[in-house]
Length: 377
Image (cartoon, rainbow, N blue to C red; front, side, top):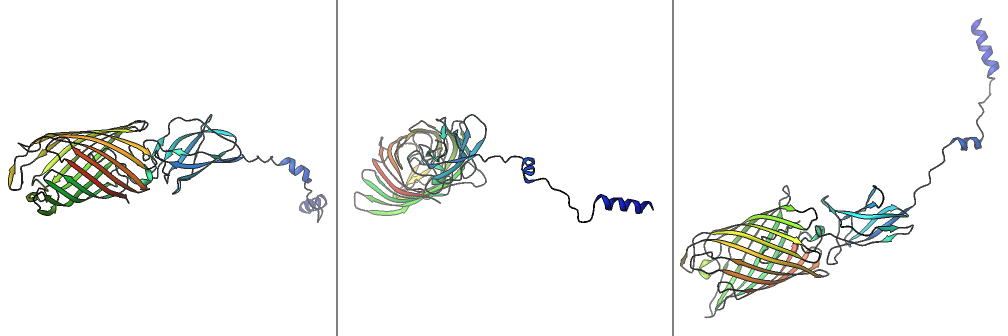
């Protein structure tokens, strides 16, 4: 009986077919939270360029709110150096850093804030000294650095990607001229960053004033170096390394000394606003050798060199170097040379290199001309 009474009471309270009333649409709208209007967006876009005006690819631009902490990162720049950065409209932003393809972050020098309105803002970015083909380092998409000539090995700048250079080398020793073709290869150890190794050798033809011509191989150079220091402002680089010269050259015609040579060196560079100063010192140990049947007694010699790298315009960099070496063999004199060179980057990864070198003492070649082409893979 009790159960029947409960069923009847439910029946009369909720008749069959009765529906629960829903609030009117006005009430529903009042119950829902008001939508948050979207923040208006704008863009900053432009071209990432190196210090000599060339576009650089695969760099991301980082901007931060002038009066805040939120940061915004662009898409990587394309082959023309173009980048695109989305930011909230009607704000002021500072370009604070650039990110290389390997993930390295380089701080940008202080600059005027970018005032972004509702329309897109055009803003080109120039690479700092640590990244672009500036006096010291050739950027993240060129594969390497604008290197010196006399100090190619000792130069603290490193190649970023495998680098191959072929060049023609003419030297005038007075009564003897040589015309050679050399190959230079350099790369970094993949698992050991900031360590470069390389090799260089070639063949040459020797012409004497008497009319005889002979050809043969040159000595083989092997080197390794470690760029162990870069300053916080990215202006100072330091490196140390070793150079080993194997006596593969034909000593009978004067293209070698039939002597094993080893050298330890230290080098450093400092990048000013418009040029870079590079220097190196070293100690060379030369074993006993021979040239044209004449025995030579090797000696321990000191080396020193200084150079300047000056970007001129667009893709051209001028270099000047002066080097000195005390006697390598007993009875031979000191060596000293001065060089004037040019690096002309004709496209992103290819560079034409040429130099004129003059001897300052009797035991150096009177004149030497280098002309070649280097490519980063």
